[in-house]
Length: 118
Image (cartoon, helix red, strand yellow):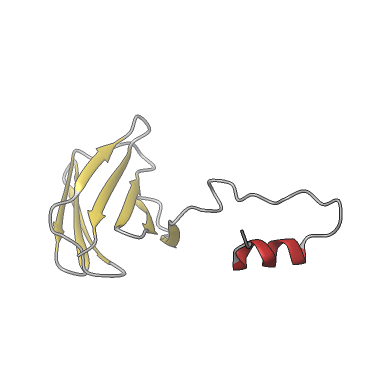
């Protein structure tokens, strides 16, 4: 059986006695971090994956009382209410997404939104 093109390329580049390099799960990760805001409240981090976009909202002073989102095709409108203060922010998305996100909240006050790509 003849070796595949990939096996030949790996064998040619490998030095005598060198161990084969295997990618870790992190190196194979399809996620790319594309943005991170410098704002303190909330701090927005976005990852672009093969089939989805994930947005993480981290709150420096704990969780706000109310966080509402509205999704247009390629942007997310965020409205945060804490006490008597209300803040609105628009986040541009890298591609069109479906309008029904999955919302996950962790113990440290970070809210994650999983948005499936169209």
